[in-house]
Image (cartoon, rainbow, N blue to C red):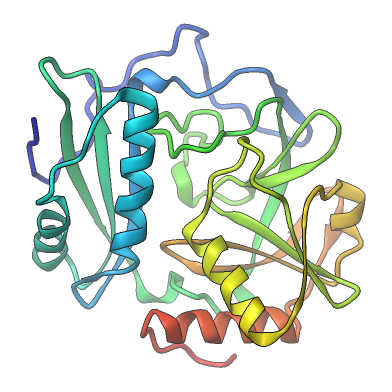
Length: 278
């Protein structure tokens, strides 16, 4: 069953997980819990001048998660529904597609549209974000869960610093809202998809760009010490594109140099989004 409308999950839609999960903040915070699958999954995509960016990739990821987790097949008309929602909303927006599996019979799909300032899309290097270590024993996993309470505090997804998700052995996984990349010794490094990391759409685009440009790429384990020694670091996601990381509390500070800037410009061109070079 599908209901297409703009609404946010209400208190009735969000319930405490059986483990009593609450947001954890602070350097080195450690938690051995996982998101509650019963709350469902979602996709969050960028709408630019009424265009849903990377729509096919978002729907493919949502369909795969719906099939694996709940045995649900998405309707054929979902793409056209999302395009209609994008046209009805603000010209620059974050459009969320929420899938709630708890509705009986079937499930419910709803939409949330939030107007954005264009300035947050591919922000200039000087406006990088700060991160802070959060140790999640199992990571956030390979699905985009509606239950975000492990990584979002009272300020929501806009708060700074953002979590830098690390496993108990000190291996870096991702940030609270994007895939992580670092440039060290002229090599572009990113953690591998091992089931604890979301297969980011922005991540895939960056790897495609790197292959076209002939950049050296290393996909595999990255420790906190290795990240601290990087010359550049950035996060990528489907709404903001590329966000340079300016530092990690208690660990390191970075500056945005040539590689991050070049990737930023090429990814923005691929999305047909004009950005300044500075």
